[in-house]
Image 1 (cartoon, helix red, strand yellow):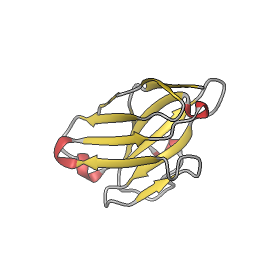
Image 2 (cartoon, one colour):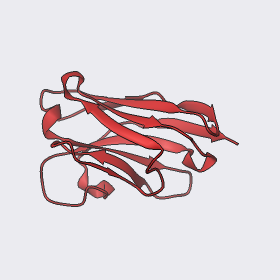
Image 3 (cartoon, helix red, strand yellow):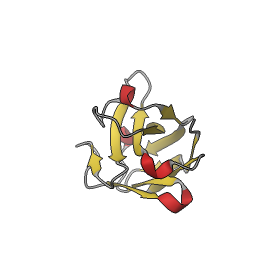
Length: 124
């Protein structure tokens, strides 16, 4: 069992930056691929970025070039640095973990563990 706790959300003006953190419990963090997803009101949960257990990184087209995902296995933590934020980035951001199994890294249903979410609000 893995427990995930996000932090770092808040209110920021358009063009600003925020850094989200997600810390996991347990001793096997390095064996999980860690993803960030977001969900805006009335919309489905959407993929943002993932960092695989082997260090591979994938971004959604909507955040590529503005967001950076990274992980620190010694701290059991994955980060999402968000720059040049836009009002359309407003959502609840969730981190998620999945094991080393086949499947889509972009699909929420492929992830086994989820954090409680942290609100990011970007004002125009």
